[in-house]
Length: 281
Image 1 (cartoon, rainbow, N blue to C red):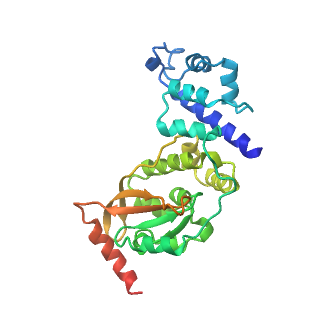
Image 2 (image 1 turned 90 degrees about the vertical axis):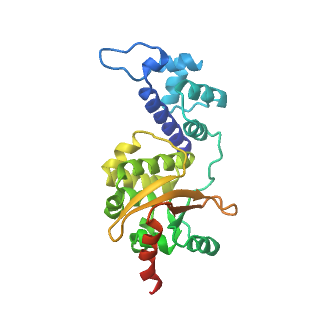
Image 3 (image 1 turned 180 degrees about the horizontal axis):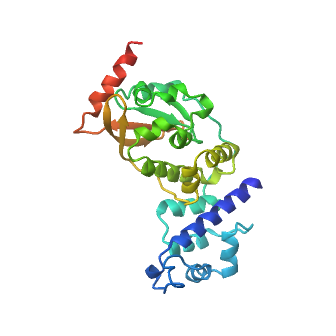
């Protein structure tokens, strides 16, 4: 019952944030007041989506109602949600499978560890459903030595991005990258946000990081997309990678993340220089 209430509150907060961010001119609606030029009223969303104002208000308030998939589709079209945001609303309303039990940190099994190490000069790591880092290769440890030094219970990707000073100084685009990660986490964890592992992580982050607290209130949701990633390593300088993520067919709850050195840069040679001293140990 508690997790259902958490999902309803998250759905209501998400829809409210999206509604408030809409541009009235895009709907051929006049401004409200002297300066407010963005945001639609609840009754305007309800009208365009074909639902009652009272019902839509209850939805934003997290009331115990059961919206149909068709109604949520209509609201998504009205708000012009992205595909990821649309899927997120459906998942929160129970139209996508969610894990039946709390997620717990896992250790990558041997065959996944061998896959990681085979990446050679491509830093690679594995994450469990609650974004705990479950394994990594030598190239990733060379890129981010703290991964082996932090306590296992602290080895959470989202936690480290927002609380580890080493990560922040390594990312010249930290503000953009951290928000990408948070939006992807939210999209993946949405139906499970009431589970204890996620609740504990979010509670700690909201207390520990003002930047996280501010970004969390924005309710951004994104699908993962392969993209360029840039790092500034204290020993070898600038590094450029393509960021990819794979899901093993036999372990769909684990994601393997690989940073492939970008062609036309010196990144591969620099990673080799970082890994070489570790090979002698």
